[in-house]
Length: 59
Ligand SMILES: O=C(O)CCC(=O)C(=O)O
Image (cartoon, rainbow, N blue to C red; front, side, top):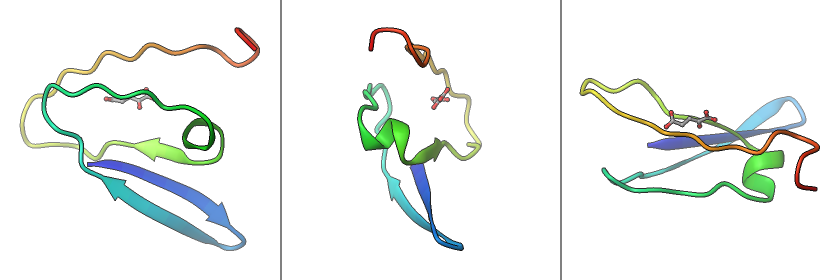
C-alpha cells in the first residue's frame, strides 16, 4: 500500500492506494507538493529505486 496524508486544519486526511509488485509510478503535482507519502513496512523483502528532482531544479 502507498499511503498519502495531508493536513486539513487540525486533522489528517488519509488515503491508501494499492501498489502492485513490479510496478512503477510517478508522483507529480499535488501528490508531490501537497500530500506526504509513505510505504508501511512489509513482512517480505522489497526493493525500491527512487529517482527524484531536487526542489529548485528543473523548474
Ligand atoms: O520506498 C519506496 O518505494 C518509496 C520511497 C519514497 O517514496 C521516497 O523516497 O520518497
